[in-house]
Image (cartoon, rainbow, N blue to C red; front, side, top):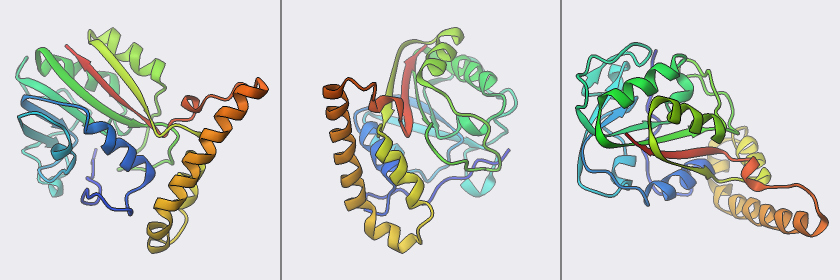
Length: 223
């Protein structure tokens, strides 16, 4: 299985609404000690967004990502128990068919009280890398982590709202340069409309909840 890194991470309007919202949430997270980045590489700007003093060890089957460890996430990790203080799975879980095994392996290699940070897409187009197998609801993620033994589970929806979803889907069909120019104003418009929808639904008694339409989830938990 090959897990490709995305384009370099920078704070520009060229970032998608999903990525900008993800990065904003990551800025409120912190890690410490030695952190295993599962599916990542040595060049990953999201490392700079997370607070705390930590060093990262990246693991990826794709050598072009220049990982510290070349390994297949579909197989058990050749890493001893309780080796890391933290772990990151950044847009990785959906690409791993044996995702339950990967979560168990993540739990195994973490030290006691070790923290995992997970980002997964939900209302998001299929994006093979080279495969795209899964989408997880917040309930599924909570049960998965609980059954593995994780505690202190926190799940935050990323950019929830039906108009944000429409904006993301449409922008992926627009030429890149045009999409980059329109990203900021269209994102603001989508956010405004979602806010109006939610207020109107409450007044009219409709069952519209923006959190039912998340672009993805940020999940944290401890061993």
